[in-house]
Image 1 (cartoon, rainbow, N blue to C red):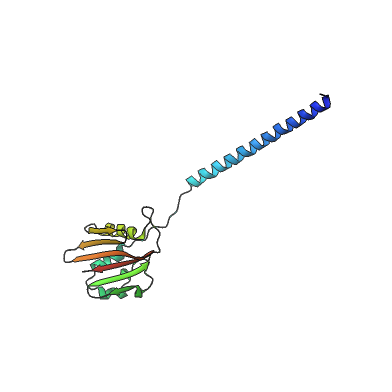
Image 2: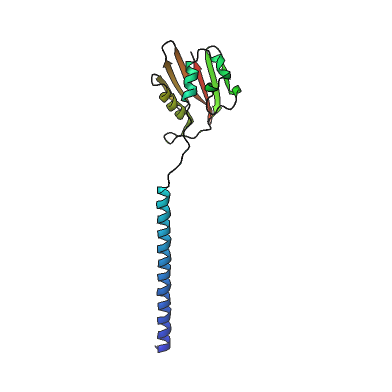
Length: 165
């Protein structure tokens, strides 16, 4: 083999080595960049919206002496109920339906389970006697009355809440 040919092979070999080193350096830099971005993403605090607090409105409704008077009361407005027409009241029951606009709070993904958990948290003295995929039922006992609170599914993300005594 001639010297010219050997030099040509040696030259190509050194070019390939240099190119592979450059490629390795680029790959290493990309891996480092990816690892840094992943670490930064883990360190960034996740900001979540606070879950909707249904307790104040639900407690106000359950303790009401007259459901008919709840129509004009701001404290009785349930989160996610857009208009007063979504709720019906008579002397012995309060019946609302609405689309679940809130997100689950990270513990449950189903709006019915979410409202069932909220009701259990709102009324520690309540008896939770029905828990199905389409219905949650509680009996809330107060000093002077017994109130039935039922949440049920009407359609996808549409709930119905009925409070009766």
